[in-house]
Length: 335
Image (cartoon, rainbow, N blue to C red; front, top):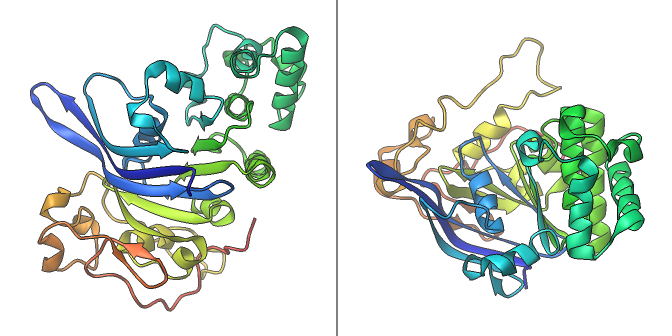
């Protein structure tokens, strides 16, 4: 049985006098212990809102949440606030995208890290400080003992991001949600953090939900990939299948926009035209149709269903891409 099962999750933002905004529209996926599942898409596709809904961190007012989020037999969307607080940090944790707004600016880093150890591991005093220093050292922060006494503004953006990661993995959670965890890091530190996440998955069987737009991270880390657009999953497949034969035009566009080392010199990039704001409501047809080079009138005749091939490859498209003459864009054997 999967550790986390998300079924038909929807998140709608409401505001008096304005039309409702459906940020997440019927998203379904699952994550098993020791598995890495990716949520991929441009900014504005609903990835981060999905993660905040799973963690119970959305505002109480002006938000309507529907569907089901089952974590090891517990329905998270119906859980009381105090019970959810007991789970957060201990059983499920999240690495946030923006460390500057996620850390308390007037509290030293050491206090913020040891708070988790006190709350969920019952560690106090010198034992908690030593464990906090070890956590900072694991994520690549130099001179961790001194850094415990410093405030977030005294750390670089990369160090703040690594401090957040240390806080997230402090209790070795069973489910870890990583929302763009390597955004503020340089290439060498990115590799170190990804290796740390791999180690957590391999050694402790942690289920990892990786939210990113970096397809290089997805290719080297994820087992299953879900591509989101307009708040819905438009393609879902195993890593190798998705990179070898993307089926939805949006997935093809994302892969085609990546610079390739084997491309002829001077060859222009091929970005996905338009922006996420250039869409239509799903009930009127495919939301990606205004940006798609393969759309037909059939694409505008109601919402496309999520079809599934015999290999388990799922796609939400009435005119899928079925011929692939180019090799895989990213080497999926890379680690």
